Amino acid sequence: MSQEVETKPMSGWLMLVVGVVLIIGIVLLVRGLVVGPRAMIQIVSLIILLIAARQRIVEGAVGMVEMALDRLEEYQKLNLDEERKAAMVSNLLVVLCSEHAAQPVLNTGTLYQ
Image 1 (tube, rainbow, N blue to C red):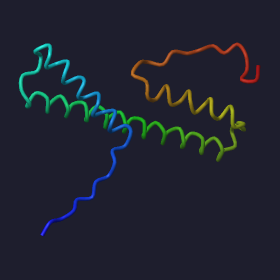
Image 2 (image 1 turned 45 degrees about the vertical axis):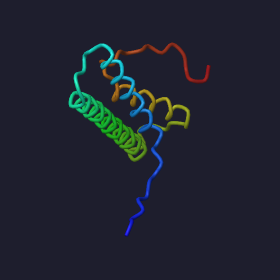
Image 3 (image 1 turned 90 degrees about the vertical axis):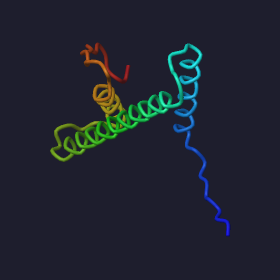
């Protein structure tokens, strides 16, 4: 009795990860920096962990931005049009997801110039 296994197509980001891992593995093997499959498995595991950690950071940042927008609307502190709201969301996500400290920027104009 044979069982059929349902296969699902890989998502775009997963295919990208697999491709990057293969390229890194080939480069490391060619340079003699990786000896054997055990080292490759460790490298793949580290890459998967880094991607998962990055995904969690982005999910948390999106949650913080949503909460900030909800609070501003709830307390009616700020009336933002969609363009300004989008700019604020973009700026917050950059600050929250960046690997470097945020640096202040002095705006000399408005969004509408």
